[in-house]
Length: 55
Image (cartoon, rainbow, N blue to C red; front, side, top):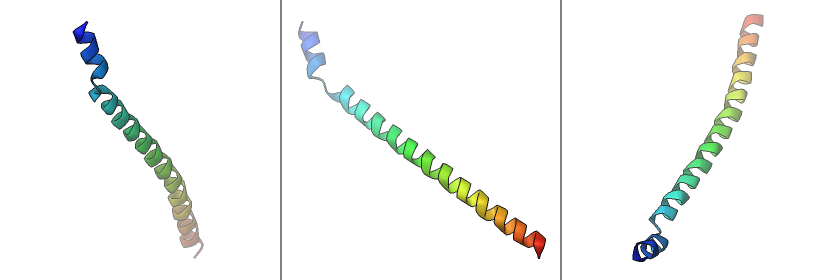
């Protein structure tokens, strides 16, 4: 029974889970930002390429 009580009071696992969730949210935000930026860069380079071909 004492072991079970120690496990209930131990908060190290909760802290690890919180850090994991924060890391996951940062990863999702980074992937979203890179995806949006990638599309804009593709459009920019396509426009530059088309303008070079015309000139």
